Image 1: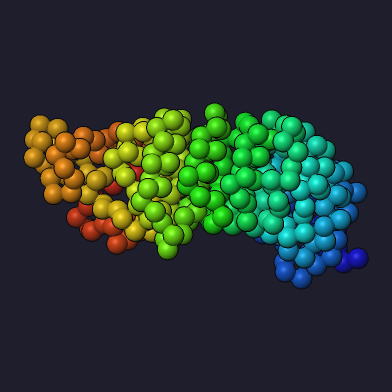
Image 2: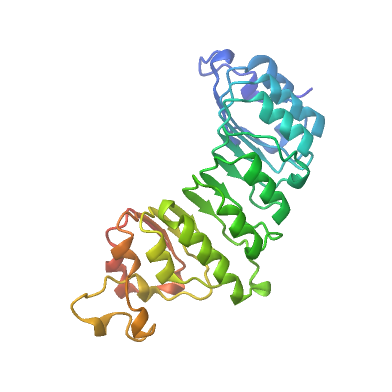
Length: 302
């Protein structure tokens, strides 16, 4: 069995048993073709964080993770051969696990036993997967305490089903639903489901990533999500930058005068979301004269 160099090297003076983190940057393409998860389970029982590319790892090898019971964060990238049954074994064996990433997985979540409960899982990333609306409903039941959810590029989800399901996460504070809706299949009637979700959960949200959304009602974001600290709106097809201007409350004629009807001229996002410090925006949605408006942000990505 081929073993990666960092699992055998002690060049930094670290004892094997003291290693608590292994991240993606530690791995090289030629170093994860074989089953070295067994090595982890034997020498590194103290591991608390593991981020590992899994494209070449066989399904049966995942059971080696069961020996590392101290995991708090587990990220399995492209776990093509991981099935629902093995995932359940891993979750049962890791009671301290709070953060789980299964980016690019092929798991049929709808096959999970609906009566299972993994209340310890707070962060879940199932981005770029084939998860269905039915599978998401099962996750809501099985992992009810999720506070941070990523469903980036989950094209089998539909707004009419997924947003009502997500609304059931009572503790949700961060949502990444970027590129979940395909522009070619966008239906303006779907806006109502997103609006209903924000109306119910928006006040709790501190992070909202909507990159690639076709249509964004920015007035609704401002009204429903006053506690946002992070907002991603890059690559949104229908979005005008002027809505972020700080309005002159003494001069109603200056409020979005040519953008929206007067009766809707209420709030701008930077006035309401005063905690906002990280903002992602596509270059085409701003001009240089408007950059002054954004000077109070800690991070601006264009």
